[in-house]
Image 1 (cartoon, one colour):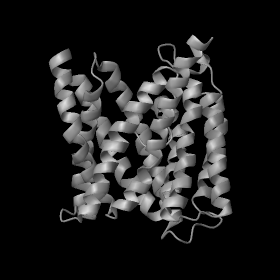
Image 2 (cartoon, one colour; image 1 turned 30 degrees about the vertical axis):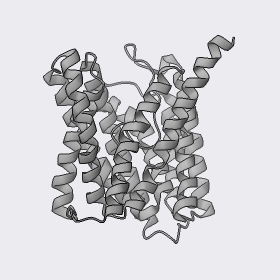
Image 3 (cartoon, one colour; image 1 turned 90 degrees about the horizontal axis):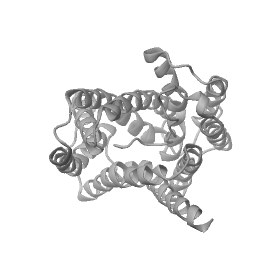
Length: 316
């Protein structure tokens, strides 16, 4: 028995380490102390310094990626850039913990996109969960009173939910990119990050502007954000989830939004109200019921059920 369970324990520890790293991304955004557009753009550029060499190595080993793979990656990256801009502003408005929780609207947005695009049937449990999840997000966002230490918790929650919609679109398109891949793992991520950099640069530059003359401390935290949130966290999560059943992976990933709330309170002094905490609990429980309660009959015939990660995407 030990020979069987020990690898699973190792995979679980690896995934939990990735989830814990991912939970810190909102705090890192606040520590960088820059605008949403600036943070979103530079985290992409810094991440590309690592991703592009790795993608080049993949091309030498597995051949040049196909146009279809790159195309899906770029299309998804445009939505990823929108997600970055919206979510980062959500962190600055509502706090890192709340922003990570309300992002979970993607749990219901993803299957709805699959329904609209490919006609994939939405599992009944997700239809039932939708109004409960939205109620939890409303409470977490301060509908009945928000964190007075944050400038705009209600707007932040709305932006976080919008980020979740963009993230769901990214997930759908990135899955298409991954299916077109033949041995390429980093390349779709690199392509998406290139498009995200362009999106955040163009949209951010036209609205808030992209700051270049930043304090050394801001550059440091942006670098940590890019490398920890976009590289380390998702390498650990990908490796860990590969050795675990999907339901187990989904359950363990729920540690991420919980830790995000705790880190926001401990590190940044965020003080969500009782109603906001109740909303967070409702969101986490609803996501747990949605992602862990399904069986193979909920998946399309040619698909494996995928754990839905709370928090930031593979390039975030």
